[in-house]
Length: 116
Image (tube, rainbow, N blue to C red; front, top):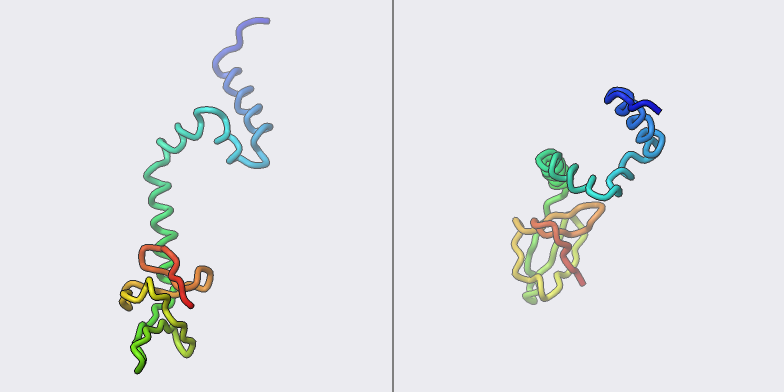
């Protein structure tokens, strides 16, 4: 066998990779070393995408009201529905909490809020 040219090698490599990973391109990240290279190479784009997704989640959220009743119990409300706050979360303010249809009541840092 004669030594292939770089172009011949590259074409054969591209074909082989396409055959192996065409159904699920993300599988290529399981090849040792590829994840690290791609994570480094796409770092800024990945962080921008995550930031955009988080901003979209915040835009879709319904901001809620926290109020205290006559007995001193703190409540969380997003409209007519009210839920009593768990004691450990009783120091929350309205700016700390929003309601997401997929996640329920969430702290502004993304962590869930426990209700009773």
